[in-house]
Image (tube, rainbow, N blue to C red; front, side, top):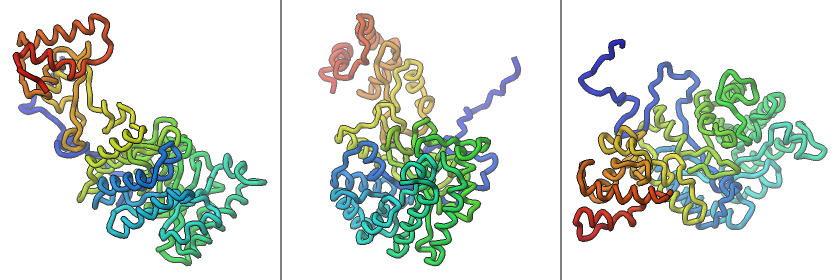
Length: 438
């Protein structure tokens, strides 16, 4: 066997995996297109509702308040967009605007169709910016309008942009289905919007949201347009758009939502639009907590950081609304940090960093856990007793063996579900001679 060097101390790669933070990107060569600043915007009150969240005004404002606690002074989430078509949505917008003008960190904006009539609907609401749906692919432009086509769609959108400018509202064009859209449409349309907005100055400088509406984008440079997310972002930057003029809004239909977000950022897009905990249309929007974890790893938010523990309240709120996140949902799912494997439990007992991706208890205020099953072994029982009762018990302790034998008998008799603490507690109390076990 070739010689393996034996260090005096273990190599933990602490520069990559700091004890007090999320994993860090150690660049071999920092991408030249990486924006100087990056952040996110939020769409729970719009796309979240489209995805099935039946929000009352009170629930909408509760979500807004939790997001504000999450982002704090970090600038991690800077805007949230609201529907305006129903009284409850307008009331939520009004409540959020009141909070914003009172010092809340997230600016409320609106979402409308790119029509002059919709712009007139929001003129008196007090927003400084609005999203405007501007479908970009021929799948939409040829079939959404009568008689249909690219030019009719563009003229409709441009009339709405002019109405917004006349009202002093900054237009944010949502290029729907951009990953199936021809540059022959998007390039002249974007140039026309920029030309139209130019006389109005920086305050009304247009933004463009690149929408991977069906989750068909790919995070690779060596894929042809329109599916290559990095090529698409660079093509728009080449039109003279700044990184802060661009947002990326993906969906998760083909499992690439976070990868595509990171590809967009690396290619020069400053802003990712999504939802906390990924709620949204069909398979969901970009989970902002996941994107922000990676942005922290890239070196953004070096000063004040978002408070990831604040999103535990959002987990609880969604559960109370009968819209819980999946048990194995990354970071915040009930079982996201739970193992059922004895070898993992043994590792947690010996050196818990062995089976923790980062300092989960501190950064998320969520515990590392072991479920007792036929596969969790004696080590799983040791972990649970330490966690529940603070008992440090050796594997060969006969009292532990008594409890373990009872546990194994349950599974030998055909049980399939894990053993809950409430069932185990009296067995532990009897074996260890404890008066009671909470």
